[in-house]
Length: 299
Image (cartoon, rainbow, N blue to C red):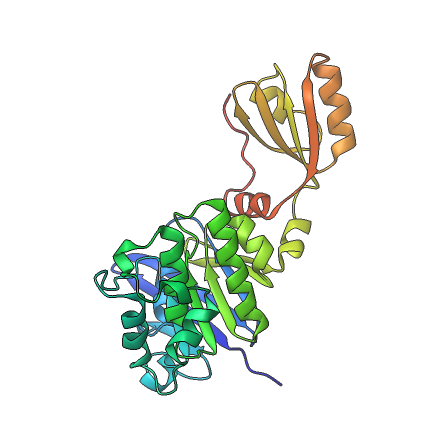
C-alpha cells in the first residue's frame, strides 16, 4: 500500500492570538494533483510553509516525500515554485538553472530541465528580460531541476493572460502524468477544475470540504440561472428553490436547487424577464457556497 506523498495530521498553527490553522488533516497519494483552495486569510500560505519545512508544527505532524520537510534529505525531494520567486534577475536562464542544480544531489542536465518547461530557447536570456509567461515557465523548470517527487506550486498562473495560463497548466498536467505529486495552490477555480484529481478547500484555518471537482459540485445547487429581470433581490430570493442571488444591474444570477418550480415562479412573477440561461453548477459555485454559505444579498 502506497503511503501519501503529502500528509498532514492534526496540524495547528498560531500567530500570537490568531489561529491560522486548526486541526488540519490532508493527504495526497503519489502521482496525484491536489488543488488547495481558500479565500484570503484561509491559512493556505501557513500550510504551504509547514509542508516546505519553513515553519515547524506547533501541533500535529507533517510528512512530505516520505520524511520530515525540515530535514535537508527530504527537502531535496521537493520542488517549489512560489508566487514571489526572488531569483536574481540579472542572471541568465542558463545560469539560474546551474545555480539551482547545484543545490540537489542528482539534478537533471540543464537543457533537460529547461526542456520540461519548453524554455530551451531562453537559456541565454536574462531573467529580468522575460515576459510574465516566460518567467513562470522558467520558474517551473527550476522547480523541476532536482527531479522532485513532490512539486509545490503557489499561484503559478498569477498575472498571466488566459493563453499563457492555459499553456502553463498543460505543462503542470504533464508533470502529474510523469507520476510527480503536485500540490497546486490557486485562486483560479477553472484551473483547479481542469487539472486537479482532488480539491481541498480551506476556510478560517479549517478544511471545510474535500473531494474531486465533480464530487464537490454534486454537493451544490443543481443549476445556475441567469436572466434580465426587474425583480429585486428580495423577490428573487423568495422564489421556491432559490439558494443564492447576485446582481449586476438588471442581470441576476441565481443558484437554484430545484430548477423547474423556480422557473415557473420566475415567469409568473416577471413575464417580461429576458435573456434566460440555465447552466450546471461549477467548482466556482462550490467554492463560493462552501466558503460563503448561501446569502440573500441586499438589492
